[in-house]
Image (cartoon, rainbow, N blue to C red; front, side):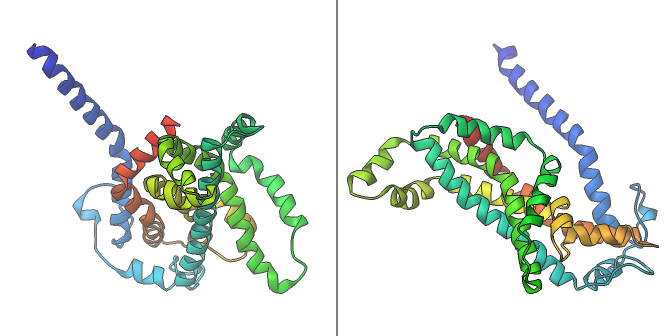
Length: 289
């Protein structure tokens, strides 16, 4: 009896130790990156002698400079704002479309429903790089003739293109969440005379808040981290393209790059440190669907 009780505990400890060992290189990489952003020289080991603290790197980053000589000086606040526009735009579109489509696929029976679900799954399997040629050709076909609209259109197109890559998986996740809601909640609203859109907005959405938040955050991170689509279509710079341009500059100072990289990764780090339970709910909801 004692062996039966202790065996699950041993298995739990084994899993915990294995996860820690697998995660250790990633944790050390983040730690060295953050320490290097506050050091005069790049830190490549954990020796205390290699760390010489300074905040000069962060001052230079907020001045828009990532190289000792040369490099590109730009308004970092404007660049961060551009990144936020893309991230929030992608998040908003993905959340709206996935909640509507997820509800429709979960609750309504219509011709072509299974085919649509299969096509969404197939679209999710395509990497963004494989689709970029077609996306670029469509960009050229719809390019505005008015020069004053070019900058605005580039933002609009990047947001739509990046959101399109996230929508298939987000729809599946939202469908999983809607599938977990009992039909009784919905029928009570319909019996009271509410329309389907009102039932969706007033009854269903409040019951799947964790799923909505998970999809919104995933969409935000996708827009925040994107490099390929932003570099191809967006005229203005985001943090990703700003860092890339300065890495290629002559005499780039790597601690400055580390500071910019830390700033760039902050939303991702904060999200995964604070939203672990939300991620578990998101994945479990999608699996149940």
